[in-house]
Image (cartoon, rainbow, N blue to C red; front, side, top):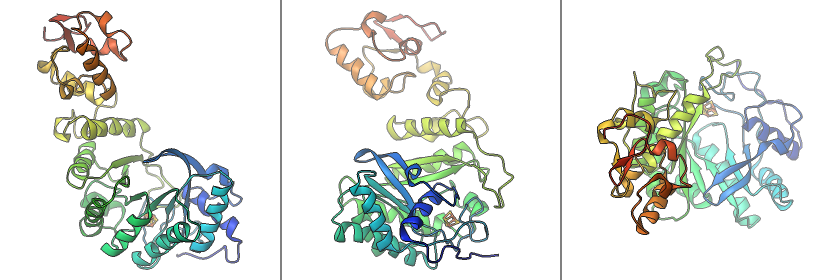
Length: 370
Ligand code: SF4
């Protein structure tokens, strides 16, 4: 078993196309670069981004990954930083892309891989004077100095935690450690980012791969947001890759991923803690929005008087998001909200009326504590 080079001598343009295709976990031999460009939300707004790999060689053997060391059918190739930078700039000057998301398998020591990623970004910034968006994937276990260099060059950096705790990570990626490498590196990046504005760092956790519960995932997300000031946690439903140890494991449902995103919003933007969330045996109910499920378990807190509730309370009402809460407060300033007519045009009004009263009157259809 092992990794063999099968693309020696390939021209750099073709190599970049294939690496970009592989970055999407696809292994076509005649890739179309257009399909590797996707619209991503960046701190600078939505942009067409080229996601590509510097290398598909990897010395690690994560059970779920298409690039794992022992997967013989993965095409292995490496592109030189100057070739990758040149290929990207050709696309950029033609107006096809406005940003780069650069990742890589880990070949040799993580520092070696990270140096090559940094070198690519450096060529773009210095030789080509490129001022556009760069997202650099960080390799776990690199030094503080290397992290500083990466943050300096990139708009966004990311290091994936993949699993919510050490025990769950060890089940799927024996060569990685949250405790020894990933969390200390994320904490270092947080401190480095204190000296910058407009840059962000994010992570990703795989859902349904390590027999983790939603409770474990959201507990770790809260820790990452509150203690390590991470900007975003992304959730990725597991999908089995053939010729890996997990090839027969069933894929995770997109519904579960969606519920985790909803619960994540509650923790990140709505002042909830993972402890508030309505878990059943560690899982969020799949048939219900988590805020609604939370409200149904806490009906003693409802209905709230919409004319008196402050912003923090309004955003806890099912159906009321941040913009709706602001709109309600704006309307209140013009006069008391007395009937549903005064809330005309507010999104989710039918749902909201089940949890509020207007000048003491209830207009909902659910049995509330009135
Ligand atoms: S280190 Fe990254 S690229 Fe390598 S096997 Fe693990 S997940 Fe895949």
